[in-house]
Amino acid sequence: MSQSTSPLDPHQSNIESWIKSKGFTTSQIVAELKKLGVKTSDRSVRRAIHRWGISSNAGVEQPYIKIQGDTAKIVSSVYSDTYAIEQVIRDHGLDPEEWQIDKPQFFSKETDKGVVKQVTVTLKRIEPYDIIVPARIPSGYTKPKVKRSKLKRDKKDKPELVVFVGDQQAPFQDDHLHGLFCQWLADHEPDRGVLIGDTIDLPSISRHPATPELDANVQKCIDVGYQLIRDYVESSESTSWVKLEGNHDFRLRRAVIDNIRDFYGLRRAKGRNEVPESPLLDVAHLLRLDELGVEFIRPNGSWEQAQVEVSPHLAARHGWIAKKGSGTSALASLEHLGYSIIVGHTHRQSLVYKTKHDINGKPSTITGVETGCMCRIEGGLGYAVAPDWMNGFATAHVWPDGTFKIELATYVNGVLYYGDKRYE
Image 1 (cartoon, helix red, strand yellow):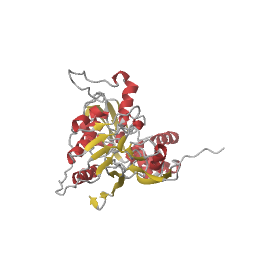
Image 2 (spheres, rainbow, N blue to C red; image 1 turned 45 degrees about the vertical axis):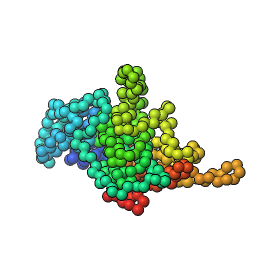
Image 3 (tube, rainbow, N blue to C red; image 1 turned 60 degrees about the vertical axis):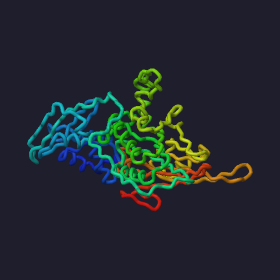
Image 4 (cartoon, one colour; image 1 turned 120 degrees about the horizontal axis):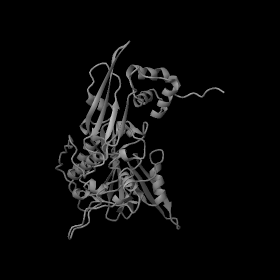
């Protein structure tokens, strides 16, 4: 019986060269192979390296990063010139401003290719991981600049304008799109806004394997998510906002229930004649939604249950169905629910229709919408390979009788298109 081969075998010489001459980590090797059209994982690369018996330069460790709670250890790639420790930290996906350097160790060795150097550094979080406080303005944050339009929309006897925006996955939002959306808000001043879910990403408490290059602790997600919502509110002060919970937002609730159940629903003591506050370890409290005037739609159970009634004929949910291809999830959602629905979740955009007939043969048409996402698409947030996602948001003009018309705003190659306007 012949020995089975691996898709990595044809690339053995390249991988060996990357390890020995450049000191590549397994993540860097995966990235290089991706450029060659080879889909693989860190685990597969590590197993192949072990099977081939490849080792790095003698005395030089295999580069890696290990994050455990509030500490991290980094072994850098080998290098020959000056290599600042701050750059080592950045190269491994961490922000030097969030970590305190502790006990760096330097190594150098003479080889036939010259002197190779390596540094091992231990880090401690400046803001401990287990301390989560209500959102603060992130350090170094630049607020989008918007121009106030002198031409205001005549709202008398006109339909309401409602905007649906979500899947920012903070702090992995597309910053340029965020600025354009804030300008759109200032221009159009929608009557209502629906944050359709997954405002924050919370990767560090996900059940998925950690991706150090896209690591962000809970506090950073909270701080950046708060600032995004605050920018929306300040860009259009007349807009009334509500927020739905998405599956990423819901990670916080699940983590509390799974690990410190007694803290679930914990509130500050109620003062005399005081209205009960939101629970302390709760998305609404941490994002300061009450201070921003944003209503939080608390689900009766899991996040899939939450819904906003936009009109008697149209509702919005975060979405719980994710099928391949634009439009398929929207169609499946409206077929399941039986009424017109706007969803996020899939990171795609679509507008689909379905005509149904009652027992007397009278037809009626319902609509399914996928809003698109406000997060960065390139790189697929570390888990999706070349994803078919679409950036943007959706709007609905809603008449007093509940009828409506949907329009998609789409962001392509740095330009946001809406109606006959474009923002860039």
